[in-house]
Length: 128
Length: 153
Image 1 (cartoon, rainbow over the protein chains, first blue to last red):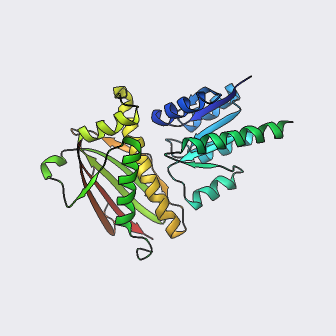
Image 2: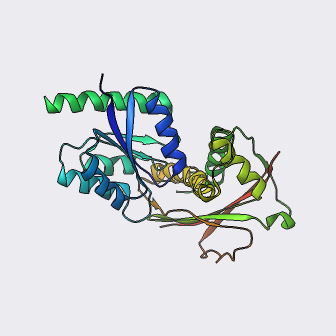
Image 3: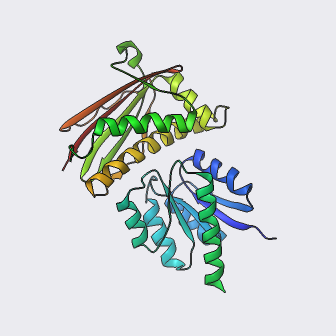
């Protein structure tokens, strides 16, 4: 069975390593990392990952703006936001750009995996 | 707003619980830490928005080294990545604390990217704000002090 491909956009090697270890043990494949928003936008164009896991607080353009720019180019992009900043206002901002999910850092592994499963199913339904 | 949210208690709970969650280390609150120990590493984060703050974590290098080693699964991260691990620790602690403040104020203040200063580096200091909390901790791996200077607009 083909693995769902993931790109991680996070300036923290801690988060990137943790995500890679977790998702690759659970049937996903991390095909790219970006350390900031600009890199993330470029890498998304090159790799077309099925799911993007995106931090919010990063050097340069933040994760919300990065997600917005990716969605402008590909309105069907599937993006999960990840941040230590996880209050109601930040969640509203996530919703305002058309995304549903904001996972708090540090995350619970089962919550992150369950959210990935939901996104995978939604993506499949959207593309059918 | 301070009557709704006890800032000292909020930050204290989050510093202790996040440190334990990321490293398994128990921090014990103390009145103060010895001035001689405060030749420490520092990590600084600012916020902008209704909660305008400058948060500084001062810690003995041995303590930060222990935390990031645990975050890296028990072996130290590469030297070129160590600062990024320290910054991520600060980002998670401050992000969760500012989230609690945001939920209490009904606003959404934003965080800057953390900046790390090694022991030998000159620290630029912090802007004066209306209020300040100082939280001191001891642990088996060293001491730490969190300073939160803030203005609630």
